[in-house]
Image 1 (tube, helix red, strand yellow):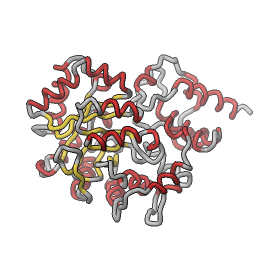
Image 2 (cartoon, helix red, strand yellow; image 1 turned 120 degrees about the horizontal axis):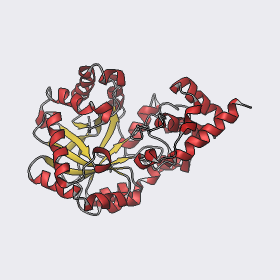
Image 3 (tube, one colour; image 1 turned 135 degrees about the horizontal axis):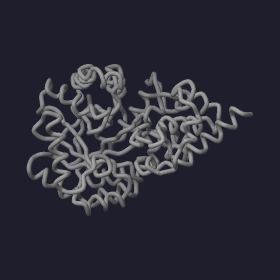
Image 4 (tube, helix red, strand yellow; image 1 turned 45 degrees about the horizontal axis):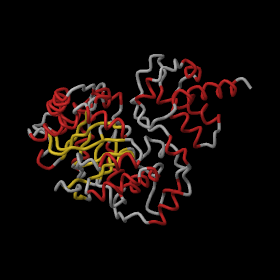
Length: 374
């Protein structure tokens, strides 16, 4: 395992981190110990950075990590959690402090190493949270020893990330960065390096988009790569500015894949970046990552599944048959569900990627209707 200095914090984190959002539903609903065993396997492979949050995996993620942490040397690991008004409902400073205390209790620890202001979509949202006192609450928690470092988790543009980091609140930033969208995050990454702020990247596999389309993303592979997933993880890890690449794991094999991806790691070169850029279009900054924050549609629409279907439509050159294949053979849902949209906008307000979900649902419905009635 490779370990790197995390910004100016004095901490030394593993280059691969264990993400707690992708455990298998049938396992986290029925066998938390099996999920915890995956986390313990990550620990044994040298991973020391463990990322979780309330609500992940049906609100079981913190409980999974608690079971695993109880069998680890606490002094050798870094634990994270998150909170924000949009996700966990805090309205006051006291609410935020209670959320921090709740994460500590559920994780079975005395403190949290890195606590994130969660899922900040843009600079305007950051300003709103600041005015609500969320940052003051986190600073109080740090003074009380409840948390060691204040981080931000964001899906914002590179320019907005730069503005948020320049406020001076944060010691680390968790951002959505991978081989499909990196050109839109470069300003944020450069700002973090300039300011001495640690960088954690999420979604190195594009929410599963990359491994589900191995032929399309074959341009990522080098001679040593046997899979595009390994190539995508190595791509993130090879950036000197990045301290931790979060791998959302569901089994031991995925842990091993992530750890093995950084063997014989070399810094990414300008030629490699230029080659990857040649294969990218603006579509890649507007793809669903299947985070599923949009769930809870009042019309019962499985929004993220339809948005993943739209991903396939874009990747395959606007081929409607690709949408049909995705809906029928992967998700097993009727296209007519997309026509049930109430246009209430609830999903769009929660979308981390700022996707035009209502428009895409309508487009899916209309194109699939025409496809089946031709």
